[in-house]
Amino acid sequence: MQPLQFVVPIGALGALEPYIAHVVLTLVVVNMFTRIRAHGVHKRRVENGAEELSRYAPHSLSTLALVLTSFVFLVVEPHGGMVMSVIAVGLLLTDFFEFESRQVEARNNMTFERPKGAVAASLLALLYAGYQSLFVFIEPLWNVIV
Image (cartoon, rainbow, N blue to C red; front, side, top):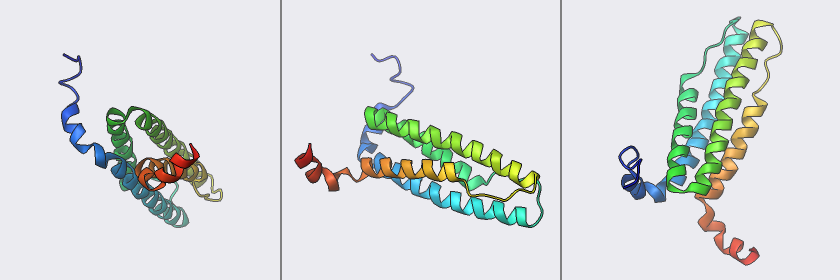
């Protein structure tokens, strides 16, 4: 008997194994679109004179869903899931600090910049999630090289 067998339903996750990498890739793309939308909403609020910004709820939810799904991917595929989980948690932290810096820019009437660090982190997440999800397409070339 495994100590955590009643906490994590591994048998149920086994049935989802072929789809979890695709779900992670989809959530990364959704997260990128919500980031673009959040930046537009924040920029509009700053142009209208708002000194305080609030978090864009769809983007926060998509980031949280990405982190949780990457943890599920960690249970199903340990190596790829660990890398994706680290990237997703890094993306969450980057989003947190980018939002804080946008608030500082709004309060101090500074130029409102794009979230460059979060965009770079999301591109890294997109590359790795695409690699994990779409590996079947590059596998023949990969096997020739390796």
